[in-house]
Length: 251
Image (cartoon, rainbow, N blue to C red; front, side, top):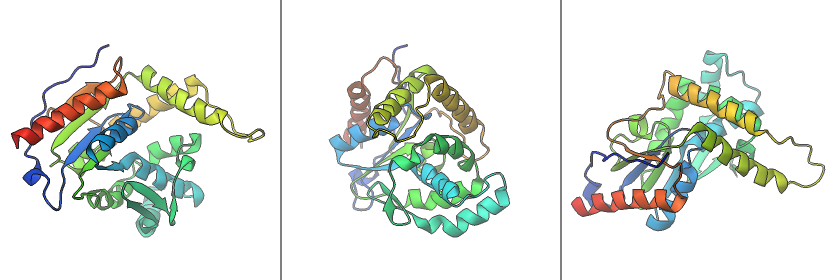
């Protein structure tokens, strides 16, 4: 299926890059739809800071795993996170947990499973909201996630919904995981997920994201819709850049 796009309802780019807010581009969409790579492409062109909100939830999930917190006990889990959220920091798009920059440890099969539960806890979302809002800066912000437009930055200048069929997203993630797996040293003892396991995991994550009571993933009319299937990364980035520059000219 070819990529399609609808015309977004433009908002005024705040004072054409004022001192406090260099503008905000929201990138919402399901897991593995290409938001990360697209954000990096946009940041390289525009010099903006990336807010990887999905990694914030993965980092929160890593905390739950390290401290062996039962996410099914919502009251206890909420109290735990409210008391420990200060352990999570983000600076210029880089996330730190207990002062250490997070990496591949938040992209494991365990975290894939855990994050769809932790991200549904209202207190977790509430605690991470001000952290995300605090990333507005004079360079501009590319906010990627699932509730950037509906909750975190409804005032954003450009709102994009990046999509792709489930099978395509599963294939992309499988290739990413395979590439990392092949670089591991001999005797590492880790198991590579099959395509089917990744597909089923993404399907379950989609269901959880779209059905959660707080900040459910959804496409709204003002979003520029892009289905990245059959399009290169350069084409997707180009579409968003064109829409952004058109807003700057019109402001």
